[in-house]
Length: 144
Image 1 (cartoon, rainbow, N blue to C red):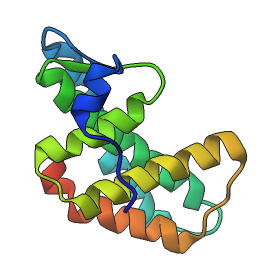
Image 2: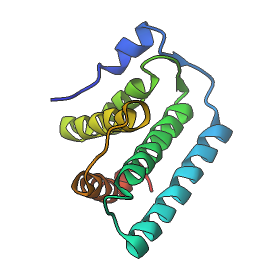
Image 3: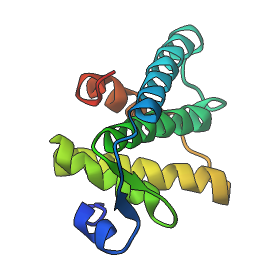
């Protein structure tokens, strides 16, 4: 299974730190993720997912999920920054009641997005479809 470390690991190593809850920023990130999700749904319904859109859809899904997780952390008075910040944010899913399979999926999505942005990795439309289905199936759990 492809899981990040437990959140306490990131707290001990200074990747995650306790802060005063940042409600304004948390609300902004949450509202942005909702708008992005609605825009993504419209885009997929009108254009679909194909070989030309697969990578951008994967990146959009990653950004939506990470914005939600970041928002929930800020509401809780936690902030991740620096190396491994995104990994730490994914590990926060454990506190939100997601199971190991779901956390593993998002961690793989995180690595896929890094592959796109930093290594020129191209993904098939099937994987982009899987990511989109995952987001839609879990949208209520994420609060979308």
